Image (cartoon, rainbow, N blue to C red; front, side, top):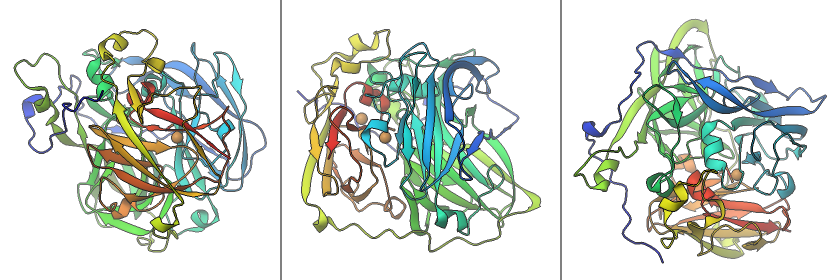
Length: 496
Ligand code: C2O
Ligand code: CU
Ligand code: CU
């Protein structure tokens, strides 16, 4: 049975009394943390070691929080690799629970995809070898352990993989890592009054996904600042929130978008703002010839606050706010002097007539299930408890939902019963035909692996799978609100 009375987002009026309190507001802006980069584009001589560890990390609240990390106390390194390379990984799980490491965005076969079937037990290793066949793009890797993804990602099992190719490496674009080329991971987090990272499952945070009070950029509570040379500055941005849709804009001038999930756009798209759902990536250029200072701003949903009596639940979702996450200051150094590029990619517009098969997917919550009972489970989240489903079926590790023929062009139509959800497919990049019953924005018209769907407004994509996934190691499609994914809003498919 599907509940049709669940609330909708109400946008617009902001009630300031509903803004979350930040108990440790910062007067001095901290510097943007720069992730360690493992640049493998020059060649690989040994196994690439990624250690998944439990640790402690101070998010800038003055106190260390227990966290997870990859070769680091929180989050992971940036891997820079090149199309054509074969990457031999050695992934060690030093956590006290099972995990997996999924390569989100990569076009690789199902057996190395790192989904819920490729579990790594505690104190065990996994040795996937990845052949990088796809074009230049920003991808990421994160935990995908069934029923545990939300919590493990929230705590820090996230890293970025930048794929380059001949064209991207010789392109007229800024590419000095940490100087004029920055990788940004945006997440929303809630902290206790003393500043310790908090994660809580209750009926609301399962139903809506966990929405954090504070925006965190590269592991530090925003805002942060960064000095940059005079010229174009490249920001490669990942929304790694569990559930928050982020709306990005610049304080001055438009956003100059050059790439989306799966690679470059044909040319720079200038836009006032971009909406990034959880899991999406965009690359933008900021023109620091023009301005001394510019700011990256983010609007995001704030969580429902407890203890407010007499208000309807709907009202608590009104509050959206625009905050500064990154302030760029121009220094005296000469920087990248090129201009905004206009021939980056070669993305032909999708032609829906090419689609041989149409499949429909409906994302739903199973209202027969009492979420309250599941929120109290000690071991992460619902897992196999079937609170969420697609086409009436909750995720079942032993059931293959779809079988797809390699190389076929297909149309997938996605709809939902309520709320806004980001739908993600493994093993491919696709193009969006319709996003929420509209032609996608220009910035979302290139290669994507996530499309969002809102309320009764369906979305449609055109996709082709070029790699294989067997029934023992299938690919996943799912909602990228991680609590929904963990609760069963996921399905499995083979490609052969
Ligand atoms: Cu980003 Cu199935 O995952
Ligand atoms: Cu994925
Ligand atoms: Cu969802």
